[in-house]
Amino acid sequence: MKKILVPKNIGFCFGVRRTVEMAERLLKKYGEVYSIGDIVHNPLVVEKLKSQGLKVVNSTDAIRGKRFIIRSHGIGPDVLGCIQKKGVYVFDATCPLVKRIQSLIRKLDNQKFFIIIIGDEKHPEVIGLKGYGRHTLVFGGSGFSKKIKKLERVAVIGQTTLSFEEYIKKVRYLIGLSIAREMVVYNTICKVTGERQKEAVDISKNVDTVFVLGGRNSSNTAKLYRTVKRYNRNAFYIERLEDIKDVPLSKVKSIGLISGTSTSEEFIAEIKRYIKKIGYMEVQYNDRKA
Ligand code: SF4
Image (cartoon, rainbow, N blue to C red):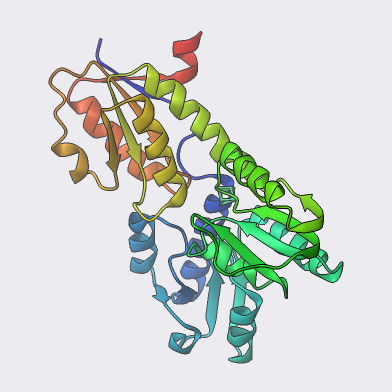
């Protein structure tokens, strides 16, 4: 039997679902709502919201309407202040986990901590987080962007979508640098992405081919793809249905379906329909283990 193996955790995570549902409600009610940058990192989802009236702009100057929604990754307090000064109504769809880190940075800042954020300094979540403390610095892929002198109190936090192992590795490296008299480390990694990584590894080891579904601009989907590729050479990054049409499947008996946290159920259903039409039967990942 040719089969598609589908894990329990697939489709939107709770943070992205909350953002998309809030945007849909607002668009239904007001017809036009602005966002700075993509509200979630998936072009298909953003295109659909745009067709319902979402206006995606790159700066506060470009906001011409009266309503604004904050994307799932959050925004910095400086940008928020500019929007509010324009007299625009702001609806906050920041993921609650990201929101919690923003508040944590504020609290630590009041306690005179220097804050080191481990993550990608170009990612909107990290750009936003930086603004919540007066003394923050990002420890990215190529280390610190500037030289730092010996510090008194340092608090370390991580971008939510890092893998826990990656985060700990970098924390250990920072401890080894002996840059502070006191260093407090917070676990701010989102469990959802960790669970998906684990399932992805397991599925990848047990199928002929893996389809990783999600936007190319999604950091967690890209990470899933890199992980999967280590365990299964026949892994394909699928952003749109067209991407699977060229994949050679004649000798493939089993396909694993994995998705990033901003991939919609609608898209997953479309992919499943296509694969089932060419003779595969859906099997739940848990059923296979039983
Ligand atoms: S992956 Fe985690 S942190 Fe990111 S939006 Fe989803 S729930 Fe929130």
